[in-house]
Length: 262
Image (cartoon, rainbow, N blue to C red):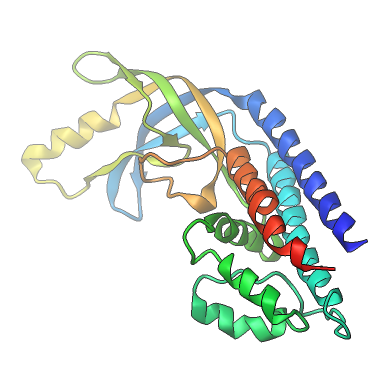
């Protein structure tokens, strides 16, 4: 039954990812406003990014369910490995290890892989995220642990194509950009210090009277995986992140381990 249970968890994760993708598409068209804000922590005037509509809470729940089922499928693999190595029996400590370095793996191996054969232990070590090509496991661990133990992963709306009109400067102008803009982030990751010399005080005054706004396209991403104040390439839609984890499990983990189990 364990082998079929693994596939059931994989199929359930697929269902959640498809549902996430469908619901996320409903907020593809958005509106972006960038306006000045007094940042008390930085003691600066910054241009804060606000994108609507926001990602609905339902998406966080769906993503959490997908992550849970993928993690459960991996844990079932270890249970299957123990049952395939009699007379050992599974314990509550058994789970699929995900370590960030070789030292950490050695520290958790004896407990999480109790009853697993040496042959399978070697395979599982080779699948660890500190080996190149196994990064999806590290991402799964990073996303699933906060979801399971602290709070649901927050999703941030990111504009990946924007057509903004600027107001408040010497003359209005249009800005067409494919630079990702994270909701809640600081435009350009720059600010104007409050303690500017008097001769530059007008710079801050002008910034307080300026704004940019306009239509944008957007996608939902995992805020755990990027800094909203950094404008950089590499932001990924959450459904694509989930998809890459699932494909890694289906195409690399299961084919590597299951043939060695009874």
